[in-house]
Image (cartoon, one colour):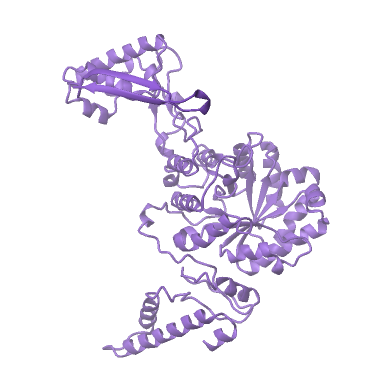
Length: 555
C-alpha cells in the first residue's frame, strides 16, 4: 500500500490493495480455523473465489507488480476503475508498473449459448475483421449513435466476427465514448475482439508524446490498427515530410505498441497504387513495420481502382517477401471490384479480410462481407467462418440495416429477399429446376420464394403451399378441394396480370382470393358501405398537407 501511495497511483488504488489484503488475511484465518487441513491449492482457490466476490473493489486479482522489462502475465477478465486507469497506463509506459491489457468487467448475461463458437484461428484460416463501426459509419446517410455501435458490436460478436473495429478514439468524442462504454458493457469475449483504429505518430514528434497514440493506448483495446502511408506521392505531398521520416513513423509507432503487448495491424494506405508508382519504397514501408514486429500487414486498395489479377499478383509478392508476417486486405468499391479484389487477395495468400456489413462505407462503399465470406466458404471451400455463422448472415445484414436506418437491398447477393426467388426460365418450365439452384438458401439464413405470377397448373398443390398454410386451410376444405381452389385462383391471377395487375409481393391478396373460393370459408364480416373525404383548410400557399377521413360500415 505504501508503495502504491509513493508511486502516486492514487488513494483509491491504495485503498483497494489495503482492503484486498484485509480480505485475504480474513479468509486465511477463517480457513485455518475450519476442521481439517486444507491443501494449498484449495486454499488459494477459496481465497481467489472470495476476492472476486467484491467487484466494487476488484481492480484486478491478476495484478503483477514486476520490475521494468519483466515478462507480463495477463490474468483473467477483470473490472477496472476508469477514473484512474489512464494514470496506471502512463506508469506502465514509464516502466514503473506492468499491467494486464484492459479486460471487460461485465460478465456475459446468459448469452454464451447464443454466441457462435469461434475456433482458434490457424495459419490458413481466413479471418473476418469488421470495420462497419468506423469505415461503414462514414457512408453518406449513415449515422450511428454510440448505443447503435454497441448493439452492432454485440451482434457481430454473436455472429462470430474475429475482429470488431470500434472506431478512432482520437478523432471524435463519440468514438472515445464507445471505448469507455464497451469496456464495461460488452462481455469479456466481445471486448477482446474490439480494435482501436488510429495513425502512426506525427512527423517530428516522439511516439511517447504523441497524444493521438496515447489515446489509442488509453482506449484499453487489445488490438490496435494503424494507418500508415505507403505511397511516396502521399509522403511527399500530403505528409510533407521525408521518406525516411515516414519509415521511422511506422517503425517507432509499431515498436512502441508492441512493447505494450498490443496486437498491431498496419493498414498500408494506398498500397497498391503506391506499389505501381514505386514498388521498392512501398515494400520498404512494410519492411519498417516488420522490423518492429508488427502482427499484420494489411494491404489497402484505398482508391478502389485496382484489378483482381493485379491484387493477387502483388499480394503474393508481399507474402513471399515477408514470410513470417501475416497479410490482410482492405478494399474499397469505387470500381465495383471490392469483393473480387478481396477474394483475389486470399488467392494470393491474405488471411484476414477487412470489410463492412452490406458494403457500407464512404463514396461507393467498402468490401461487402455479405458476399465475400459465403463465396469463400461455400464454392471455394476455404477455412473461415463456421456454418453456424453463415446461417446468421441474412439476419445480420437486416439487423445492421435496421440499426443504421437503411432500406434493405432486396436484390443483394446472398442476403437479399429476391436472391432465391424463383421464376421459370421458359413457358411451362418449373421453378423447381435443380440446375438453377446455386446454393442452399438455408446455409446463409435466407429463404426461397416463388413468384405467384409464374405458378402454372402443373405447379400447384401441397408441394407449393407450405405445410403451415395447408394446415390453416384444412378447416375450410379437404386437401383435394384446396388444390382445385388453388388452381382456380392461379388462373385468376394469370388473367388479372394480363390486364395489368401486379401480384409479386402481394401474397396476402392471393391468400384471401384462395380462401374465398373454399367451400367452408365464411367472411369474418361484410362491408356494407364506405366513403372517403379529403379536404384542405386554409390557402394553398401555406403548404397545408390536407386532411383525409375514411368511414367504413361493416356487419
